Image (cartoon, rainbow, N blue to C red):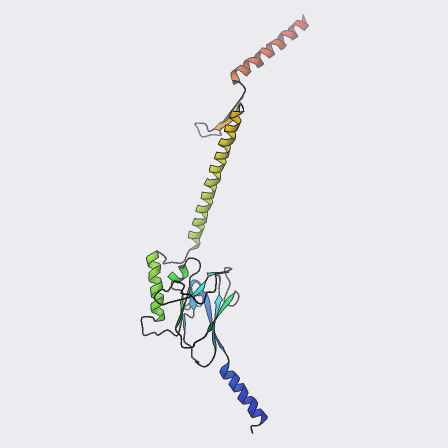
Length: 249
């Protein structure tokens, strides 16, 4: 019969042998520099070393917009069913471990698995954001080959560099300009409609730019010409002058 200390040690060893192992993978991180990156996994490949334990992949999201999905090596940027982290919008500057995470439970330690970060428009994948588990590095489905295939798709679709701040600013300015043009068109339409409504009631108001480009000149009329109104004013003034002269006599 085993002594109590020996039994405890045996049970502890058995528990350790059966314990799960978690592979931590940064999403939106360069495995070359270890720094945050628009596209990348760190590491980009793992091999399950212990086939007897339960294993988990813990995807840790850094700053950016990410969506990690399971893919196949022949279609590296297309969701193949299975794991889907959902879209993760993470504040810029968020480092590994500071943001959200998603877990994938490995049910068969010998399976070969492929994952891609497709974000919202596939751009991260097109720039090589591929993660592989147990890939055979001597075959056409080697992890580096799948990454190259994803980048080839990027070239095909014109996605070869990460979005820059300048292009985003330019796009924002363009959107703002379009919004401004739209607002101007709307204002012009409203003004025209108001003017037409006023004209139908016998009154109009128009404003047009001068030839020199200076401030627009305004002209108004209501129920008659401005010339006729001026004559009436002049006649009234003369009558007042005549009345004053009669009083002085």
